[in-house]
Amino acid sequence: MYKNYLLALLSGILLAISWPTDGFPLFIFIAFVPLLIAENNLRQTNKKYKNLHSFLTSYAGFLLWNVYTTWWIWNSTAAGAIFALLVNSLLMAIVFQLYHIVALRKPLRFSLIFFVSIWIGFEKFHLNWDFSWPWLNLGNVFSEYPQWIQWYEYTGTFGGSLWILWVNALIFSAIINYGTNRDKKYLVKRLLLSFSLVIIGIYSSLYIFKTYREKGTPFTALVLQPNTNPYTEKYAQSNTTTSNELITLMDSKMDADVQFILAPETVLAENTTFDKFYKSKAYFSLNSYLSNYPNTSLITGISLYKVFNKSVTPPSETANKFTNTNKLWYESYNAALCIHFNHKPEIYKKSKLVVGVEHFPFRSILQPLLGDVMIDLGGSVSTLTPQKEVSVFKNPTNTLIAAPIICYETIYGEYIGKYIAKEANFLAIITNDSWWGNTQGHKQLLSYARLRAVEQRRSIARSANSGISAFINQKGTVISDLDYETKGSLKGTIYANNTPTFYSKYGDYIARVAQFVAIIFLLIGLVVKKDYTD
Image 1 (cartoon, rainbow, N blue to C red):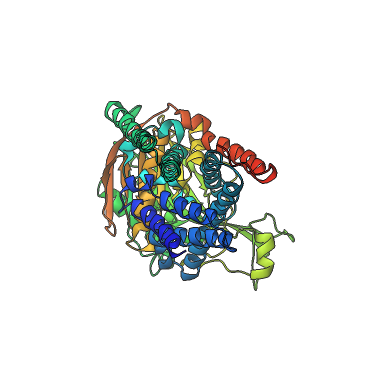
Image 2 (image 1 turned 90 degrees about the horizontal axis):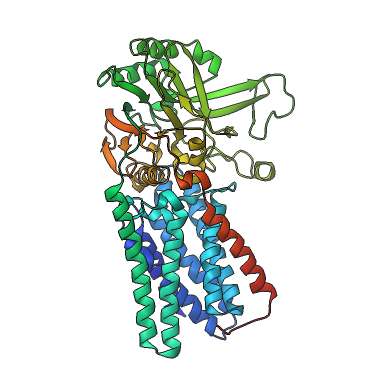
């Protein structure tokens, strides 16, 4: 029995040491094999609690993976970290247990097709529900090696997940068949097939990487990195002070060639309404500075709110109630603001919100039971209101159209395709991931942005509060960056591309097919009588 737990832990180790940014992704192609062997061992026994042991072994392996790769959540919230690690591991174990149930009733080939499809289906589900946390979706594992996955412009990250799971399933089935039939030729053929799938995937991508030429019109952008401590400085600082600091950072590298400037997420952290900000000294300073550069647009993060004085009932599901005041309701926004001289600022409100920090999941059910348990990261702890549809920022003096992407939104591939549908020709990422300290957290988030560059074939300008600010080309290569905890600015030339990719048009079609297959196979596996013939 202990052997099976050790096999599950080996899978956890292989998954962990595959993960960016300090891992090597080749291990991912064998990472599920020990766990699948452990499940097969348990399935063949007649022990009374084999179903329970199957669940516990997988939970142990997945917990090890989650803890090793995302422990850094602890730096911002201990309770949130414990919840995320335990629950995400639990969800993975439940998915694997569904495979175990089907494998008890159906032959090997059937159950492995179900395993591949249910795992991809789970990853798709994890992108869209209230507890969304797709950080460990398998296709993300190649983010430090974009030269291996240039075909993501056709498949998105789910092409990577399918690749990984398919190879793991082939290797596992080869081992099981050899254990039953002792057919060395069959074993060698299956292992060679698995190896060939890995090599073909990598080398076809390397060819695309070598031959791809950046598309579109080159332009110059400037990203700012103020390096303000979010726990001790940022939310105690006025917007006027912050705007003056941003102007100083701009001035160090600014010239007439710069067409877009990016400042980090919620860098203007003094909570205000849009109308008040529009009349403030902070806005006047920024607008006056841009009067010297009439062809330049500035995208900056800002904390905003809107008050509903006359509303007795909540104006929306995400509205918050004032306490100890005559005013009743308000909505809070984590927003991107685009300022262009002599034009009224445009606003985009962050839509993909961080669970427990910006978004109260299943609020109507859980809030009456738990009360206000939002996680305090030094700023507003109210539920934020998202924007229903994405919007883009157009520079009114040229053809540049920015996709304003705020922090956590970076990890949602199909979602970012919605900006492309609105003709965005480059990705403008603003983020404040300083909460996690100098850990793998902020490094992984930057790394995942490289996947978005490949999927959409869009260059990226990225402004991070404490780093790492960077420019990324359409092949997912970081062409320049600013070190973590460095105050400064970075100027670079990137391309504005107007051509959508296949993935931009069709999104997560692999995952949608996988979900359909998983449902059909699950129903067959549960309803149709046992069948052990292959």
